[in-house]
Length: 177
Image 1 (cartoon, rainbow, N blue to C red):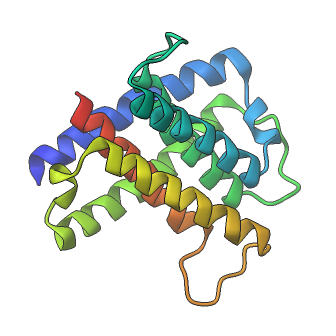
Image 2 (image 1 turned 30 degrees about the horizontal axis):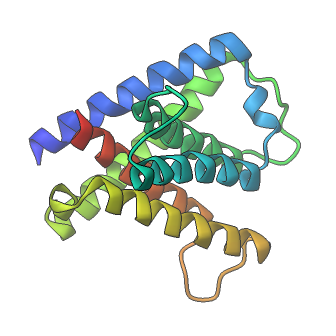
């Protein structure tokens, strides 16, 4: 588990670095996106990964590693959005955005450790394509919950699904490394 924790932290640190760089370039323009729009952004990236895997080739030379990083960061953005009040300003200081990122990153790491304990690192024996399929399934769950105005009867809510997607994407990054 110690190896997994270090690998997890390494991948998350890289994702955080990209988040900081993009926020330095664009500010917090992503704050205009509602969680449902962030879900769609995650879908676009996960679907591209699946399509390229099925076709065995790609025509746009953006590397797939960056798509997985994008999934991680869009999940964290969605979690941040869910935690902020509706009237929070769109423009927030980079230091505040990083602090909010770190809160969600810590939550995802804690969840990974709990689940890894119970599941015995089963993800290590999974295919990256299966991780991608699980992400796509979770996205469809998110869309259904969003269509139901966030209400669930017997299921986990939006945040739990974003956290699972985030962790699956980090597992894929670890497996690709």
